[in-house]
Image 1 (cartoon, rainbow, N blue to C red):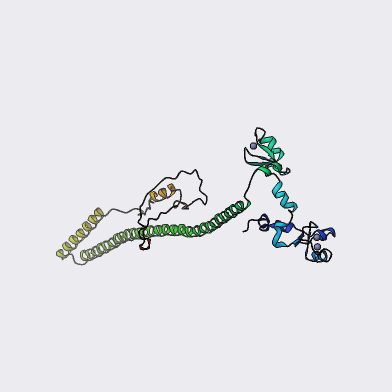
Image 2: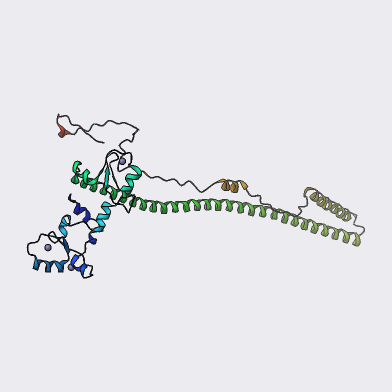
Length: 329
Ligand SMILES: [Zn+2]
Ligand SMILES: [Zn+2]
Ligand SMILES: [Zn+2]
Ligand SMILES: [Zn+2]
């Protein structure tokens, strides 16, 4: 970056506004590459050749010296137009506000100001350092670029962390699914066990009933046959009647001890606390944003708070005995 205005223009698209005056006369748009100071005209590569045949000693400036070229209409507009009132040209300078003004600006905002002068007059008494401005210009341009670069990098960071956290949310969901699967499995196991227990007990009852019925039938049969066949065998008859009585009592006692199980149905009572807890939650978790921010340009009036203070010994052997100071943080 040099300190000329021309090179500042070079850095923008405005240079494309330079067209060859000779070609323009022939209604052709050709990019100009030279400016002749004597003719005060711009020429393209072809036309400068013809120009040089006629005017050998004219001072010409190529693209490398556009600071010697005149301003184009666009450049003039950029420089001279009022930022607020696009149709007006900047004519005056208000020293009170240190502001360039067009006639509208003066009329609207600077009527009370005491030091409003024509720019042509201001130039005569005010000094300005184009070199320093150029350095400041480059500095702020660099800072804006840095700012843009960091923000662009942050866009990437946001994208990457978005994807990572998306995965994290899905993992969380899967963990919940897995936990619910475990609960479901335990519940199903319990249901199975309940079914087995009930069925076993009922089948047992059925089985016992069948056995007792069989026994009863057999005894009755045997007793009946005994009574019919041999009336003299009183002992046999007695035993048969005794056994009948025993079996009847056994059955009666069984029926007294075992209640009839009517429609042994199984009931599932859901743990509504789980659903209730889930429905009370707003989301699977909190989305927090962890971004560090800092200013490339500190506000000079910003009041900083000291959060902590540490003292360090930074002396190195080569320091010797002289006292050194560190300035700037
Ligand atoms: Zn030309
Ligand atoms: Zn010339
Ligand atoms: Zn204005
Ligand atoms: Zn003013």
